[in-house]
Image (tube, rainbow over all chains, first blue to last red; front, top):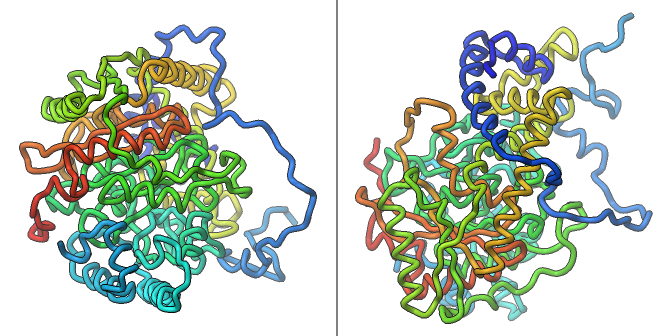
Length: 96
Length: 495
């Protein structure tokens, strides 16, 4: 398949990614190229082959439900761009 | 031998014998960074005061006759995607250019507990996406042996630092070759451990099922020493392997007899330059003469590794990079509402990162998921099985690391896949979660190092080290990371 700049802009919108027009043009051509390599995987018969989704096969384990030291709130908030009363502040989300 | 060119083990002996102090050594290396790094560009941040404080503490512990960790007082650097409490950590990105983490990665904690001075944070491709360190938002790193060439990537700063004597070791991370390829380009030893052997807690995530931290050193024994510090279970990383890690220095036995080596025929094809193939085959021949058995093996799905890799790496990294939204940490660009603020903030990301986010968003889309991502994950199983079958016959695989010696900075490619093809020999190892070590095995016609790669079965890290150590003792007993260059000086004439 072939990517169009409009498609690239739509995908970038889903990922909240600001792109210039020039970036969208260039990405469309480059991604078409990369996807061609992925299209080659369709030569293989993978019917019945289990997917490998993790780096190692591990089983779930439970830790004790014990309180442990964690990052103090002030330290966790120290790098936030905008903070008020112990909360991260962002532009208004809800309409008045 | 110059002080900055010693191996970790040689320096440790001198420190233990009190021939030199860690403070003297650390000052010496910091001076070297001051003089040389304006030309090489290996470091983004130098933490001189902290390094000297740790060095003095190690000296005092030794003077008091305390039992100190073998690596106490031996300074090195960290790739800038490994978080450090109180020290700026950028991952090579504008989005994190002023981020100071409130905690240490587990590997950093372990190094500090061992009394190891950290010299600073090394340059890298943005969020570890790239093969030349040129996607760093901050600066170029030059190959120490030819200033017009790339150091490789994404851990190019770490490789260049160790090659140029600006640290005795460095840590990097490897998602598709990001330790092994720069080690080959800069002529040092670089190891990607088995997935799960080293904690990823505090490693800024690229592709979580592929990422692994590992060491750069000047010889194989030093790689084992570093692995001893950083390997082992960590409750803070749910994918970290249970149990204690073995003592990897026990694997350092030069014994070619009984070693079964496989040369996968798919790694010796026209895409790999003739001189690289010849150098790797020469290494196999030396091992065979010393008593190893060498046979050709096949990894039948090898040609599909790149396609599967770019689907998986894009899907996982686009998900992981969702967190750089300007809300909780990192830079924020102003916007009238939250979506506008996030979109403006994420516009700061570089083009390689954007490329992978858009592709990952595409392949993770509900209607495309079976066609691309899930298919790639099934091919990943086939690739894993290829390796498992090969390891029924041989102990280690021996392959090239890169198609050529270091390519020029600013190289032009005709297509995006041509650029990505630089990773052709390294990505399958990550997809299968295996350990692999890259080390110099010769010199190209351009005077630059050629690397080879030993690959072992999962958790066969000791097997890989043993094979590499055996080869090193045969071919480069002074240490593969410095013997190949025989008096070559760091290139500072490039500009």
